[in-house]
Length: 380
Ligand SMILES: Cc1ncc(COP(=O)(O)O)c(C=O)c1O
Image (cartoon, rainbow, N blue to C red; front, side, top):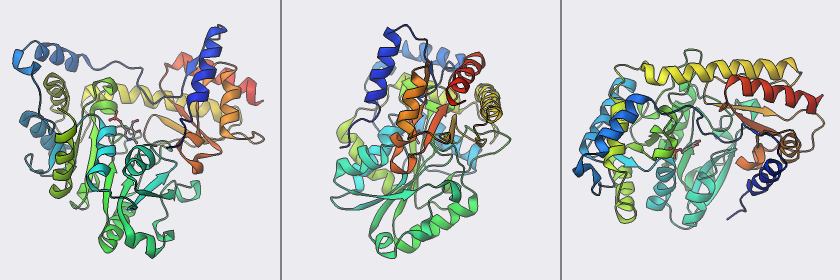
């Protein structure tokens, strides 16, 4: 396994804190906004009920799978069988990692975007002795893998592909035509897609993200309450789609975990049931409007100081090239930590992330303005 790239940054942060430097954390993709009260109230009530305190099932309770299936119906128009095509996961991360345990044998090829969520290459593929095949996400390709550039030999050998749009870390979105093309390739070369979609609701400027399953049901999709309902710490998500793949994931999970606490499943179901159409309900809309405003302020601030940065239409990440003259992403991030601004170096998401940094919109507007002032002093 590769060394933990962020350890050095963590150490630096500790040192700066000790020196009394005020840190503005724009590194980690974790909400600063609270979980909606409606969900918290449900959680507290449900936790008091004795039968909700027992072991859950790892595939998720029936009421939970029902609410997940219902959500996919109102949100994407999909009809899912809650008994065969839906399973609970302990947050998307667990699903992303354990799907490899279910299907990847030593030396199997797994197509992984890079820069990308590090679990695809490491926690999933490498821990199963699989072979990650890196698909570069380049700016000139709008941060979409150039699937035509992958050799036939690799495509024939590939068993699984991870795909994630809206994308972490680039904030890119995938046009439906592009997704259709990838699905055609998957069919032609007989691999399946794990569509990692935790930012499906995290969109701006009236953009509505699709589900891959709207194109084709041969694949699976993973999502979770973490980003939708500001519930990262609750560890509750779901995987849906092709029943053979879902049954493989369920089988692995039943041997490993005992499921997400029932009262948490109840709370998430309460949130999902707020959806009455594809339109985000108020409890989600409220936080997305806040992030949209922060995005606009941060983007304007960076461009005004001459740091050219594109505006993403989704996620709470800004992905931008380090200013001219900077050596590399890690050195640049270290420089900014000296003034108390913490960003994530692109290299942390793989070799094709070098030359970029990721800025998370996870601080209030006043703190973002303060961060901009400090950044300007460093890059001018
Ligand atoms: C691309 C991507 N996939 C999956 C996850 C996992 O999220 P969780 O396990 O909280 O559902 C994250 C979290 O940041 C992510 O960015």
